[in-house]
Length: 484
Image (tube, one colour):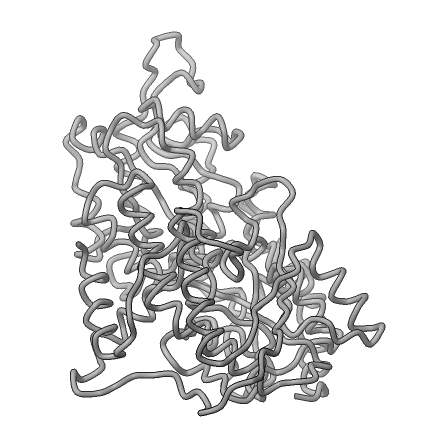
């Protein structure tokens, strides 16, 4: 098995937690990798739970149901029974452990438009839901309106522990408060991580550099992607024009440009060093990055050389399965649509800006990631905090290994190297409040440049800069005024 799993098993032995089979999705993995690498063998890492029980109290979660794809419905919180599916059985087993230890009952209300339901019930003073899990981009409005609790104030919730996503906890803080987070308790944060898939046969056929080696040597760059893609693209049927029936080096999905931008180490906002945020857009490096991204993703002179003209997902997936495109830019969840591929394929992180960059960065498509949030009027914060901490902790021995086993064994990834790439990807995921909140249109800036097929990215930023700054300033004032 890959490095992560061996480290995880070692960590679980230290944790003295009984491992069990798990489910059919994913969880945060880089967190445990880091922990396993740094925790001395004699150190016992456990959740700091109280030595008490709660008399069968119910903890109700409000979770999100996706109407157009089951892939994005929350299935990591509740399972009514064992059914032989990896993730379902992992959730059932984990919940059983937590319920027995704490003497509680975990319950779920699965609904469409969770953010709307949460807003309506909370404004009405309803305290039915102990935890609400709206998709992050929708849930931010609940935080803005003061309807969510600062998670730092929740008893027994130890966000610094490795079963909570440290990248999320660092990057989702605003005015020293954190209103939503994720971690091993969740799966969709992994499923919605943006990655690249590649056709191994085409790499061999065209005698190209091994992408895995490039990644490990920090030579996997935007320029390298363009260079390799250009070699492959050709008018296969000889009709003098490039269509989906020909061979392409790269397909660029709608959210690929912003993924390349973040992958290159750029951000929309960064910490200003004084507890606030400031825009990162506008530096010389930022404009160099967006120039490279646009050259790769859209340039009238480069388009015919390597990049599939923008087209629908199902068509690109079909082209990839048929061996007509070498690199595709999808979310990790889209691996299920590649099952018809008869060749070996692998997973890659998004490329670096250049070889001087020291860390890969991989964007989470937060629009479909459920957040862990607690209503401001929660009537039993201790019970809620204890439950969330226990669920996240016990997920490391159930949900996390279940996801890896599922992804590596039953979802058509057939090589150990892809598992190693997943470690890199999960350890370097990007959360950016400017992208999520989209203050003054700043979070949409890269996508708007791409959609407009424009190289006027400087003027496009200058046109919205003041509006964006005003919106950010107002948000910081509002969040500073919110209670815990």
